[in-house]
Length: 334
Ligand code: DP6
Image (tube, rainbow, N blue to C red; front, side):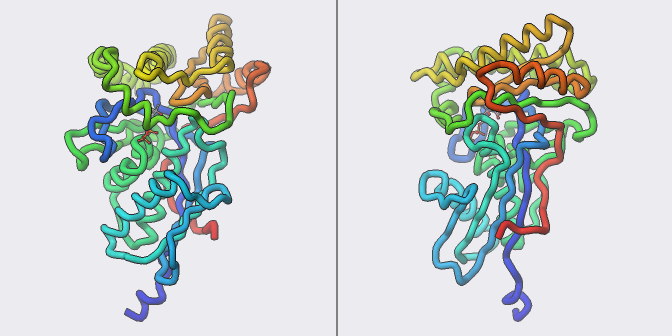
């Protein structure tokens, strides 16, 4: 007992954002974040969240600090919902302090919720003394944000929709070193997005085109996974763009319609198509935001990046390699 009294209930985790090659769009069970379809992604080496969690009997209230600002809104509520799950599992009733830092702009369609909730799942569970398996960690992260379930995996991941909460989690398709590709995140807007992906998930299943999408998906998932495993970049890229356009068509034709693209998004799409005609293989995809992820082979990243940065609408770019998933760090943020 004396030793457990002295024990420090504190842990820090680092986690990458991920880019979805096949998108999670529409929740079968919104409370538990169970999706209608499987999704596939790659973790991003340069879009990282670091989170420290401490449980302490001396903390009188729960505090959540993101990028130096104390949260008071819906976001704090979402964080504390996951903290409560961890408290329940570990029987720790104490107050908590959560501090988190992104190395990229939050809420700009670079999936800060994926890196954020996966980092939170690992740091909170370890701080509370839980020793979760990778499957359990993916499920816990999923409760915070669906796409976070994929960030815990090293490299390329597939989140299988499953039949219930216990079977809806991500597994590895291939490790980071499997394929030397790059994701150039082309940032055309760094402000908070107007429509959250959560709102998009809510309206999507009522869209008549959603049923058509679900029918097309199983073949596309099979084919893109095959292209990824065989490193057939052209085939992979064609499917990637088809999938991205389809997601945004669903968003744009939902009621009310959601337009994530802006002028810069279109400029980048046009530039990628133009560059491709000149012989450099590059393909675009966008998650729930205006920023464009340009996927290319490693050797082409530098020249592509240079060409893309000449577009006037571009604020900055972030070049990512395939990355390892969520892991612990010895150094804490506080
Ligand atoms: C377009 O995982 O952000 O990026 O569970 O409501 O937090 P919540 O949704 P979220 O949705 C991601 C949507 C997407 C596609 C994807 O990442 O699969």
